[in-house]
Length: 123
Image (cartoon, rainbow, N blue to C red; front, side, top):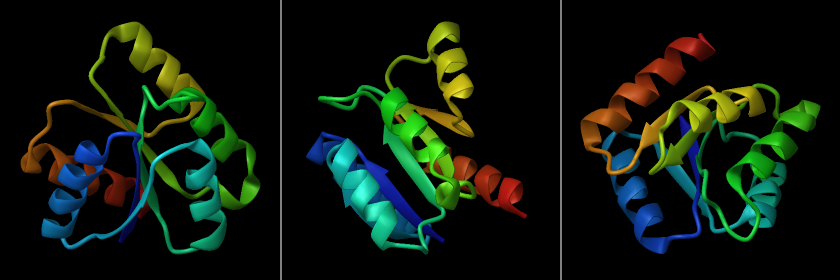
């Protein structure tokens, strides 16, 4: 599995990358909306994205919408990474097209569970 972490926080990207590596996942990183789309266009093997919902300057909602609007990205799974997991935020994210969400702070066990779920969805 190859995952892309899209987060404007280097600290969050580093923590998530370390956890994903521990799970045996290959990792690429992007710090913003445009870099994420460029990464997806250049790397066909990325199967899952972990997207910060509070991404700046454009939010995660806009990125998810852009990803879902490109047919060639249709099979890519998206996990929203957020500090806010209220019902409205999750509903908006699901409406945008995410497959699951991961609430900060997260643990290695949380990350493993999400990856297992995403793997089952892809099968």
